[in-house]
Amino acid sequence: MEEKKIDVNTIIGFVLIFGILLFMFWQNQPSQEEIDAKKVQQEQVDVASEKQEPVVQEIPAPASLNLNDSTAIANYKSSIGAFSYTKAIEGRSVLENDLVYMKISNKGGEITEVKLKEFKTYDSIPVYLIKDGNASFALNFTTTDNRVLNTKDLFFEPSLTEANGVTTLSMKAKVAANQFLEYTYEMKPNEYLVDFSIRSQGLSRVINNAQPINLDWKLKAIRHSKSIQYANRYTRLTYNHEDGNISKLSESSDLDEETETDIKWLSYRQHFFSSILATNTHFESAKLKSTNLVTEESHTQGFMKEYETQAPLKLEDGELAYTMNWYYGPTDVKVLAQYKELGLEDSIPFGWGIFGLINRYVFTPLFTFLSGFAPAGIAIIIMTILVRLAMSPVTYKSYLSQAKMKVLKPEIAEINEKYKDNAMKRQQETMKLNNKAGVSPLSGCIPALIQMPIFYALFMFFPTSFALRQKPFLWADDLASYDIIAQLPFSIPIYGDHVSLFPILASIAIFFYMMMTTGQNMTQQPGMPNMKFIMYLSPLFMLVFFNSFASGLSLYYFVSNLITIFIMLAIKHFILDDEKIHAQIQENKLKPKKENKFQKKMREMMEQAEQQKKIGKK
Image (tube, rainbow, N blue to C red; front, side, top):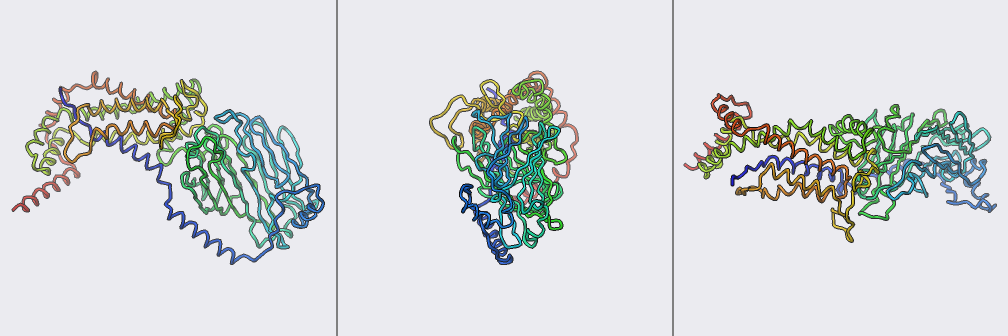
């Protein structure tokens, strides 16, 4: 039986791609030393701030107020000073359109519930972004009589109006009839975006201008997906700052804190849904914090991350005037693209660098177009075929390189035998042969590296594409989550507590592809890695690590490898001819070859090493 040549570079290329992906999982995770250093630094800042700020009397209002208790009401009014003018009336106002249902509480004037009407969670429960106290929005400020007040403890008087389909809710915390702090919410029909403004009137002598007014926005990200670990991987705080730069806090660290300047918007992403605060008057600075709440896979845990933003607001002539927007809706490119003036589309995790550009301007529009007339699963298959056809020239060059190396195999074997005791001379003669024959040993690895941007772009596209969410295909009920063909009574580390079929099929396809490109008969070279083990490594990665990934991603790799196998079979049997390749190589040998600078440098280095070796023997 003829022994087939191992294309080592192709194997290394695939292993390198998977290795890079694994590295990307962990690259943002800070060390314990970095976390401790951040805590120490923050403690120093806090101590310094305490020394600089004057001591004021903080009088907290009770967490809950019994409106039937006259004594409690009297104490409450005494604690809030001038703002006791506002009537203490419990209640909530409702804003809703066809897309969003929202409740705003009289206590604090803040949003206490947000439900997205068109979406359900994985277990058919309505999607809530705010519910049961998982979020808070408040202003902290100091009055001229040295009271530190928090708006979440103040009552606001609501006023609801509607005109031309637009519903406006005014919430006022009053000092007098014409002196107040006002939150205004304006909801339009069929919009996820809610206009929001903060302004004060006649409070220049009530609010202490010498002390900062701090905006404090907190939210605990609610879990909506089947796997909390998987959803948590794509749940993070993203922000636009410093003239359009998009930055993110770590999605994997237990704690990540940053202080940034010139903030335009803040996105508290919850995988496929986002809570975004945008402001026309940029925050001059903001302290951002993200705390990871997920330590292991759980079917009962409800929250993934806890976000917090603290930003000082500036006064103009002693008054507040901020025009903002709330966005509560899907992290969907089609929806967010409607708000180009705010740039909210940039909050979508397309990926970084060239990977993100490919995702944003190639795969996202392509899939949007295909899914417009075909089911999501069929659209993935069509997109896979188009991608593989586009990459077929690279596949052709890779296979041509393997065919050339196969033709040269007898001559390389002769060189190995002739110089078996002289590794330097053996390598030197092999390089000469490859140069004369016009063969590059690296040509098998380069195609795999060329495909890496496509590989990683798709790696980010499928888990974050809202267009795939809850779209079924064959046995998978959600292409944006993992498919299940068997539920295990226990959990296997890394693999999980279920068996997904699409990763199994993709692993089998990768295995057969690598068998085609490396051959079944492998000769273990002394001092070299076990190539058979390396050949099995890529399918093993796919089988284990993709078991909890989006089934759409595994479907893509399964179909992609099947197509690649068919393309390579077509190239082998209908395009390339070993005899013609052999004749071309012999013809190339007869032509004079001019060394490039790299080849010349390598040859000179080997010759010098060989000369030094001979001198050493003398």
